[in-house]
Image (cartoon, rainbow, N blue to C red):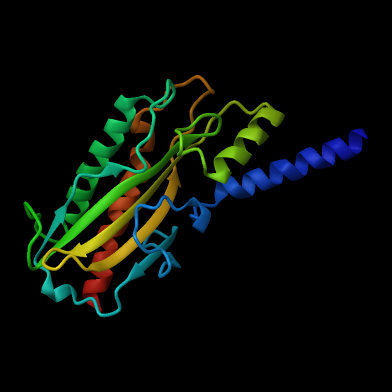
Length: 223
């Protein structure tokens, strides 16, 4: 019995480690922020991360002279918790806006609003979670739930932080979709299950997302 229990625990732990190492967003984890997920395909970002994305094969980057970044939003609207308070949520979206403007501003001049010749970026944070506590309905990511079970069984104290985003890129003139992307990442580990998540714990993830968007645009432009 002891051997069977040990093998079972090891199997669960293995599943958990595989889940934690994968940052691919599965279809059952889509938030509903994008209107159409059917065209998304798995791809590698410039930094090598796995993302789900779609780019209009007829996209002509030469038509666009500037980019307008809408304020990022939390979708679906979450309920803050003691571990992930409203100040953290506000900090995450605020920093996401800053990072996008910083990196995409290297690609194109920043516009003050949509219009002809403008690419409109509409971003959302669609998941914020830790191993043992997340936001409702954000705590729907199976990885978070599996990892929580492994953490409890093995006595691991560190808490991983997961962040997910979905973004759509629109033609500022007629509002048709130019591209879509869905991805997630893991931030700094928290020391224990009582530590409050701060926006600074996921800044590295957000910086990576923004930098990849800039590099992706440069690749498209060079084709």
